Length: 85
Image 1: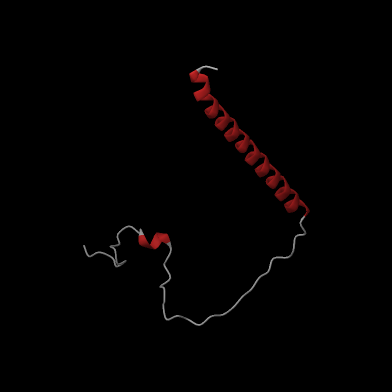
Image 2: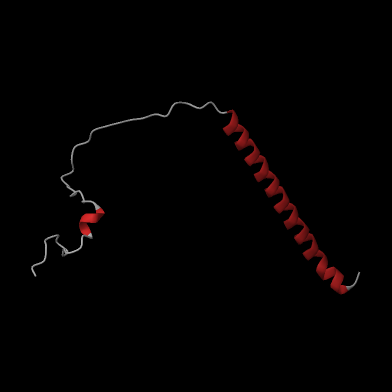
């Protein structure tokens, strides 16, 4: 074996191991996806749980906005009052 061959040999082994690990990881991920799909298909669907509660006001009041047409009406300034001409 030549000197270059001896130096390249460990690199080739390392590269082969890396590819093998990548292949194993891909196979493992595919198997997990397959199992998840089967689980989702065969799972028993339950009714959705709806919970309601009434909480006290925190003291913050938000003013409801008007319709978009109110803000962009022709002849109105920013406050909504008509201009004097």
